[in-house]
Length: 204
Image 1: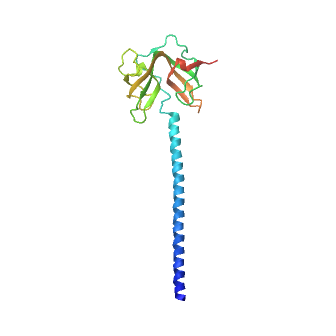
Image 2: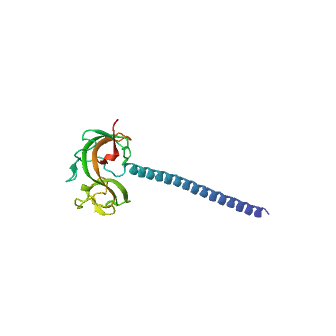
Image 3: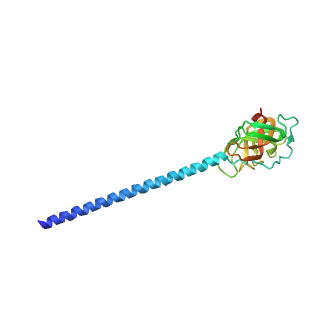
């Protein structure tokens, strides 16, 4: 009788031990999954922050050398003369809209909005403002019609130079090269190309 009870006791202890062991393993896996989930969440958030940072700055070269394409003619009677100041009303980049600018250059030309796939890869850029007529390769003197394909000879953004683009719109106007300070972080932008006359307003 004592022998039977001892066997049952040993079996009971063994089963109890196995159950405890299985429970401990399950808890460990759960904690590991929770920890992994937290890490993944942090990594995802970091990636999102980086993406947002890229979006905020875009890939635009905000400052330029001040050089202009060959054949670009200075405006005869611009609304904003070189050396004068104006408020920028466009938002080509964060911190641009509302900034006080100094006019560095004024030119009469045709401006285009264009869509293109960067030569460096990545998503297609839609309705980019602005590319001027003199920054298009081998197009002659006539205004290029919307829907036409052209090659861009400008590096306003990374992967733009040499890209094949589609003309979305065309407009003859005065364009300006401007200096200004970003309203978001105080960064100075020099020789920014381009702002159209409609995108500027006088300082009151």
